[in-house]
Each structure stands twice: as structure tokens, then as C-alpha cells.
Amino acid sequence: QVQLVESGGGSVQAGGSLRLSCVGSGYTASRYVMGWFRQAPGKEREGVAAMYSAGGSTYYHASVKGRFTISQDNAKNTLFLQMNTLKPEDTAMYYCAAGHTAALRDVFSQYGYNYWGQGTQVTVSS
Image (cartoon, rainbow, N blue to C red; front, side):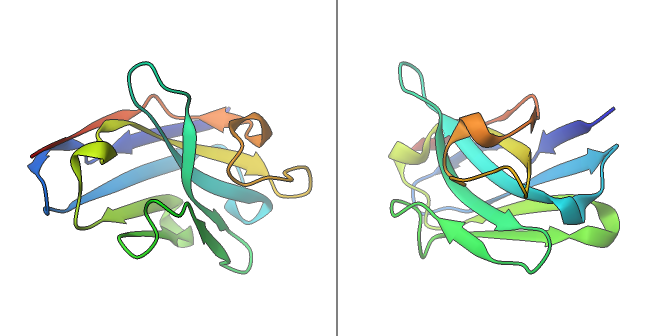
């Protein structure tokens, strides 16, 4: 049984930083693409960063490129999202997700991911 558990969310002022973590279990990380998504009230869930566990290729949404960094500790099956220079528009529930590498076509589409965490809230005040 695959489980993903996020942590690290909170409330910060604009310009601040947070580091999200996602601990996974029940799967072999090297076979998956790992992604971070976010969803603000009234908006669709959007992908912000993704990483191929095998090889380490990373991808970022234009809105977070240069500010967010996705990384992974394969030995601990833990995914991270370092978020710097946070803006009020980054406020959302953040989710980590895992998708089978062989089947996933668009790393920023939520529909390609098989497993999801419960989410962690990030609130950025101006």
C-alpha cells in the first residue's frame, strides 16, 4: 500500500522560506516520477515541480522557477520542496504525488499521477 505524507507547511511573510517534506512508503521510488502540486481555493490543482527519481531530471512551473527547488533523498524515500522568496500568490494547499515513470506523459498534469498525499497548507502574507 502506497502512502505519501507531507509536512512542513505553515504561515510566513512574503519573502520568507519554507521547506516541505513528503515521506513515501510502499513503493520503489526509482520507478516513479515525483511531483509537487498546489491548489488554492476556487482554483484548479496545478503542478509546480517534478522530478524523475531515476536520473534526477527536474522540472519547474514558470511561476516558481528560480525560487523553488525539488529534491529527493532516495535512501529515505523522502521528497522535498525548498521554497524561497515566497509570495502571497504561493498560498495554497500543497500535495506531493507519485506517478509511474513509464506511463506519465505530462509531469504537470495531475491526471498522470497515481498516488497522493493528504496535503500541507502554505500561507504567505503580504
